Image (cartoon, rainbow over all chains, first blue to last red; front, side, top):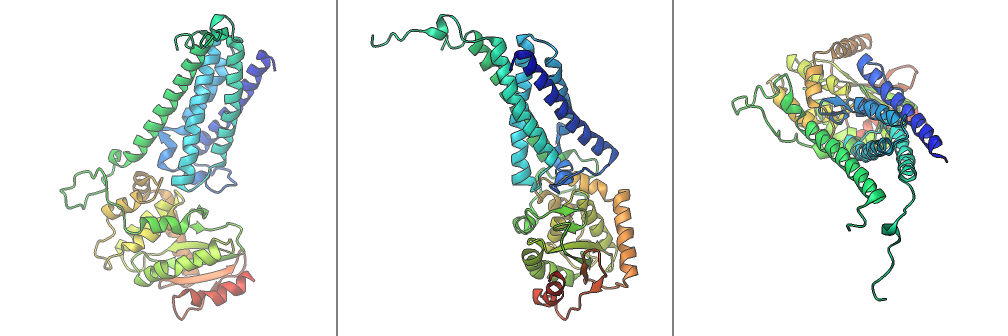
Length: 150
Length: 254
């Protein structure tokens, strides 16, 4: 996959993630029942872990996804690096929240799982994008000869 | 090491470190926020504590917290319902948190009903709380229904029964309700305390009273069962043991 296509894929996935986050925010503030097949979405969304520093996790997710989307508008290495850092950080936080859902809250939110799946794919694509932009290993540091024991 | 931290590798290490910092900050803030949620509440919880009303930083757990968690673990809850929403049979309980026989059923019989009928997906349970015994009952029911807004009504009600005191002695107070809330993993105690006066809880109490009137329930506990969507029939009980429920439930789940 070429770098522009990688960026396009990342942009699409980031928008999909943003749509999930926006739906959860909408449901929260309009007191609409969340569509849920796992039966635990409301429990998770009303738990004390659904907020970080008083901010709903869905709002943090929306900001993160939109930030990742924004980084795809540039082909610069800095943009790829920022996007990858946000995605990888978000993925680790997402894994933490899965552990909380299973081990503490005793309820699973399907939308959270969908978001985590998107983050996992985004992590792979973002890492690949960063690797490509940064270029293949070149120069003496990457081809250091084995000198010991020679 | 110096050679490794050059060019592309330096970039990768930087991105990885930034991601780790982002994740750690989020996790730590989320953890600290969840553990200190009670200390930022607008409504005092421990107004009746003996330590001069000072904010309890860490309330002791309510008795039976682990047992309650194990009893309901993994079973879907939705407002006042427990169990598979598509279960073949629905059993309805009219209860009062101050009623001693309700407590007896809850602690001695409900675990068997849950194990044999609810956990297996055959029966779902529906709770209707009615304040038969007195004003303290309504205080308890408001907290129970507020817990239902977080889909933890059954955990909360179970723990309330485990701490049951003498009728109308004021045993259902903010301190106990706060301790029970804190004993339920992931539960937002602050929200439950605030939700007790919410329109949703008012509506739940009204609906429960209407349900009780419509089927002529004037004492607790009283049980009804029906094939889900079918005609309601009172569960004829001569005792509150699990064996007393089996004929009715077995006949309906057949």
